[in-house]
Each structure stands twice: as structure tokens, then as C-alpha cells.
Image 1 (cartoon, rainbow, N blue to C red):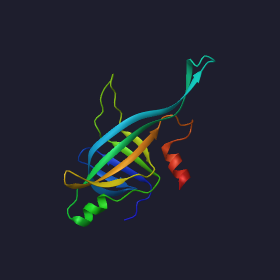
Image 2 (cartoon, helix red, strand yellow):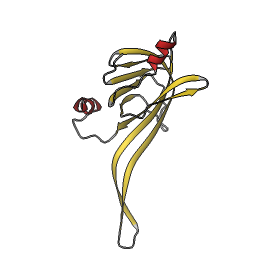
Image 3 (spheres, rainbow, N blue to C red):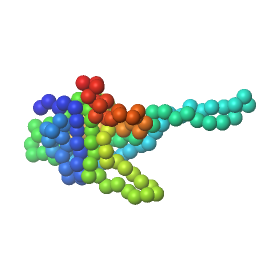
Image 4 (cartoon, one colour):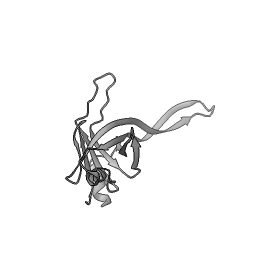
Length: 148
């Protein structure tokens, strides 16, 4: 099976599809982290007077279990996607303000997937990120297309 560029994870009991090829898998967990690079500006007395922010992003780790009948189908559910790939999370529960957690949306997979055994079952872990400071007119889709 050849995967060419996009992945979709739907709900707790959904599927993972890469470029429209459905692979049966169950998202076990999705963990998110908000990061940015900060440069500090200091005056002549070495006192902090400001910041410059760049590369703001939201990163996620997705752990998937195969949901398939038979060993071959289960192995297919744990195949690494192409690098880079667009990953779309949809159907995950999101919290409301003030502690809003917005996991659903488009992300970029740039490698770093790992296979492991979790609670006695094979699992695939994908590390993806969503840039939050893209220039006007640039989207995750255009970034992935430009890399192809």
C-alpha cells in the first residue's frame, strides 16, 4: 500500500486514511503542546525590556492502535506516512473556554513516527505540528504541496 501525503484521524472509533486509503486504527490518545521561540531584549543594565516571538506552533503526539482483523491488516494500520504529510484531526472532543483545547485541525507530519507496544498491543505514535504564525496566503496544504 502506498501512502502519498495526507492523513485523517476521525473520532475515538474511526479510521486513519492516507491520501484517501483507509486504514483501520483507533486513536488511543492525542496529547498537545503549545510552544514558541522567544528572544529576550535587555537594556544596558541587563534588565528585561521586551520579547520577540517566532515559530509559534501547536504540536501533537497521536497514539494509534490497529483496528483490523488479521495480522496483515493490523500491520497495514501501523505503516509510517510519507514525509512530509498533512494530518487532519477531526471528531476529537474539545473543551470550552477558559481552558480551551483545540486539537482538531490540520497538522504537518515531518517524521519521527515510532512503533511500540502499549498495554500488550502494537501501537503507532505520530508526532505532528501546526504552525500558528504562517504568512498570509500560506497554508499547511500549500507547504506540503511545495515539498512534493
